[in-house]
Amino acid sequence: MSPTYEVRVDGHLDAHWSARLAGLVIRHHPDGTTTLTGPIADQSQLHGVLNGLRDLAAPLLSVDSPGTRSVESRGTLSVESRGAAATAPPDPLGRVAWPRATDRLTIRRAVRADADATFAFRRREEVGRWLTELPSDPARYRRTFADPQRLATTLVIEHGDRVVGDLMLRVEDAWTQAEAAPHGRGLQAELAWVLDPAHSGRGYATEAVRELLRVSFEDLRLHRVVATCFADNEPSWRLMDRVGLRRELHARADALHRTGRWLDTYGYALTAPEWAPAIRTPLRRNEFR
Image (cartoon, rainbow, N blue to C red; front, top):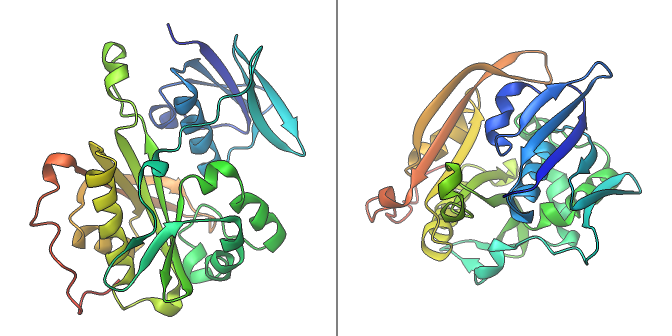
């Protein structure tokens, strides 16, 4: 039987996020905090929950279970096993031979030194308007970028010797019924991408995401990949259309933007049986971001 965890965060987290956070039960408290409670199968699933909370910008306060204790160090919460050395989180991307070369690009795993190059374009308003956070403090961004959990899922796109964008490939467990849980671990991934506007309009993002799909289905042998964007972010959902992802969700006014507007969200996905030669056609030079 999987151990029961209680994860506490600052602020009130909407109940609909439970499905994304391993099905944990979400409870609000009068002090303005939220606890998420329920069974978590292993460290991989736990790190998936913690990554999800980070993406939702929910400040983590504590993580407790019969077999773990939460440890706070310099404002960053980590989890250690009781009575044994902590187990390093799985590294699915370590099974892939990096870097990957496309016709015009190189895709490689991110390192701490890439923080400044990615900050330079992520801080731009036309980019940051679609991101979870618009970074403004270089020192804080460097600390966030260097988080091992973030680096484990981050790739950078290079054209020549210049970083022109970054990608996220986060492998997660597929949702399963309890009896099938061992067979659904590590079979789904969430994709995301950011391109430097100075290099847009040349098809670089399309070329990079196509390679990310190839890695997902051919190297990692995943069952399904997903991606989301604001419905107002037309370049992003048009890219998803181009690379063969299928729109399967239109959530109405489900995301509160920093401007105070409630925006719609589009959700896209692709499964392994849909990954076919017709989707993997070579990039045409007139295909734009």
